[in-house]
Length: 179
Image (cartoon, rainbow, N blue to C red; front, side, top):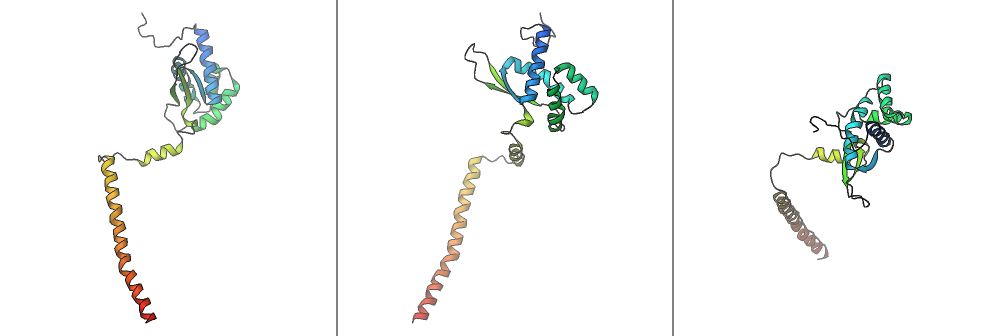
């Protein structure tokens, strides 16, 4: 029985699992996005997010704790430099897992895990567009479109009416000058 055992063992010994998680975390810090199996991605999220949280405060103590977990100087420079600045105001949820098609060789469930703040597709523009949208109106979009289409012809007829009286007046003035 595995009551209360919440760690995902990934069919590895403790030392192998620790080395795997350290290497995957270093790679995600370096490349900002990696492709791996879904089980490893879910285990990596649990391992990497507390390490990324440590990078918010650049102290010697936090650097030593992160170094004891990763054992990679370049990854720590990147983590406490670029990544730490970007995630400073984020309260958590630094990674995103996106499921991919199964792997051809063994049909393993694949996933892409990435750092949320470093994705250009879901960047500031998408957040700004989402912020503009409100949820106050309960009107359907079909009713909204119908209102817009009926409002447009009314505006066109008003401009046509305004133009119609001026056109005969202009013609009359040209007839008077020729006569």
